[in-house]
Image 1 (tube, each protein chain N blue to C red):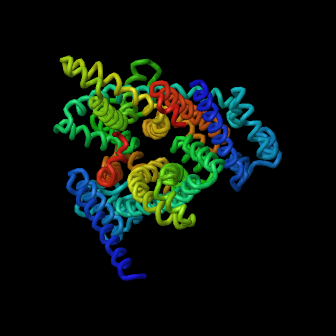
Image 2: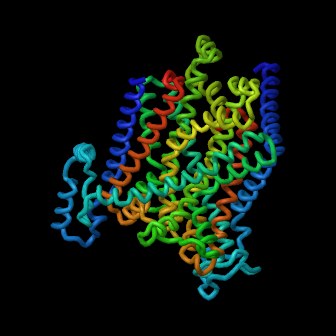
Image 3: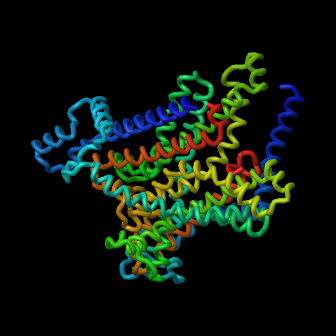
Length: 313
Length: 297
């Protein structure tokens, strides 16, 4: 067990290192001088040389990567050369907004998706089951950014119920009001994923012998469904959410841009459009780490719950 | 070739077609599958004949007719420059399909090759390839796309590169696991014992077993690619104006959402219909081909 844990963690670290090195190499191997793209063609050679020295671009590439990784290991993501601000500050200022958004999105999806899947499984092959099936496939298929745009069109432009832009004026109430539509957009696809998953895993568990035994004992159907089936059936959702952090972060980018919300997605987008390489590197690194950590955690939890997976390796 | 073998060969081909026909029958019998098929065919027809159906030049600017609501003259209204949205949507569909076909095709071929190498090659090569696949997959797709756009600038090619690179690991992994499973199966061991060469085994035994699931996987990826293309173009990182794309129509429309809702509705609806169509079709194809492939069971 411990060995499996160690193996997974080491693999996670290796993946992050490779991913970051690939990204770093790509940024610096591309034809065109990053300094010139940053400063524009009219910058004087002295300033160019100064910035180049500051960004450490005179070293050979492998050395640069090692240096960057070393800095990252000590918790330093570098410096935004234009704003003269550390990338850490910039990234961790924006990160909470994205985390609230993702949590709110997943939260409402869990609240709706699990009961839906539960109903569909209990009334298998009924009209309700069919409707839930079609609804969940549709929720999954429709891209998040369209959900975001259409919800702005409906709830903010036409009905004027909720604000569409920004994250509020600082008060908690206004923050929550500004969070409703974005969270709706982030979560809608997950309602579908969760409903399908819960339905499938409940159907599987309902066929198992312990459920049959419970029935034979004459337990109430309600007790069986909630105590014996649902409790086991929600376990795979942990894995699904862990694996889905990438999708969540991707949809956060779109949602943050559509709603002009602050957050890590918007930060990356702005850094990309202004070609601010240190910020791009730092923020992509943080999201990659988030992603790898969550998938690894999901794997580990899965292994604790289901010992068969450990042996498979 | 002897007569008997030729006859057998013909029979085999005939049976192959029959099974394809039966699968289609099974798909159409499901209401969801039939709906998917209708949507997909509609999208294909409208995209392939886009030049025929379009009523205006998609790039012709007529500022005096800007923000027109739908009418007989402009079926879906006009955008902020007075361009006919109906024609732009049609041509945009053509571009979306082109992008998905080209990039999925490329990813399929590369993924297949790498997967076969990983499955058949030495263990160390397999490990390296797997590690690479995992690393590529460890960027959330959109983050990866944004990073690539920073480097190469926004263009249609960039979108395709992003799709190819992010999809290769999916296909590669699948081919690899199928190959590994087949490699030690009895009929292939027998074939090997009889002295069959590497290429004979791959082309005659591995490929036919891998290609079906792979194609289903690819057809289910089309909505994903269309979403990526529309999404990146919406962010201004894909198709460059004035070329019409569903994403750029949405982007233009979103900036003027308080003036008129039509561009946003017209740009988004085709995306919804296409992704729904391909998803429905892909799901029922998968169920019809092989119930074991079902993700949720």
